Amino acid sequence: VEWTEVVSNTIGVPLPVSAITILAAGTSIPDLLSSYIVAKQGFGDMAVSSSIGSNIFDVTVGLPLPWLIWSIANKGSSVLVDASGIGFFITLLVVMIAAVVVTVMLMKWRMNKCMGYIMFILYFLFILLFLLVQMPEADPVMTAPF
Image (cartoon, rainbow, N blue to C red; front, side):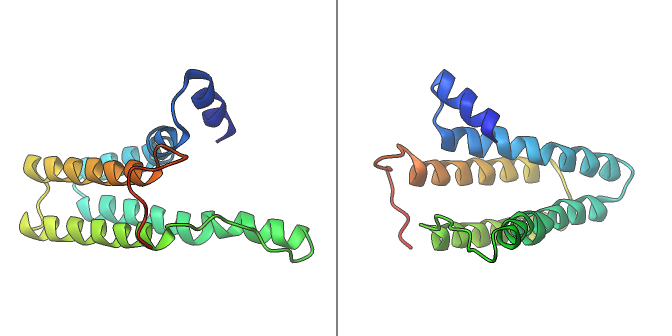
């Protein structure tokens, strides 16, 4: 994370852009490869379960465990987190999940090119909304309503 911040500042790329692209891709590539391998072997349900399960693990273990360890090491002190706009981002996440589920249902639970294009459109829509709320850092184009 620090390396990404240093490189972003050095070459003039805003940190939110680096976070949503480089860091997100870096943590997702192993999931992509494992999902691709099992899907190619005919286990599409395992590929989907792996990608969903790894994200649930990240949120329920990967985020709180370091905070818990830090808190224990610092005599129970709280970890201060900037949670401005968290309601908006959680709502956006739920809407995106619903859009994915509806897309999969409309495609009759079959992965095809059309579904792939729709998923890319949803991903780029998410990135667009994220960046509108995050940039420019001092005065974002759009403020998170909640």
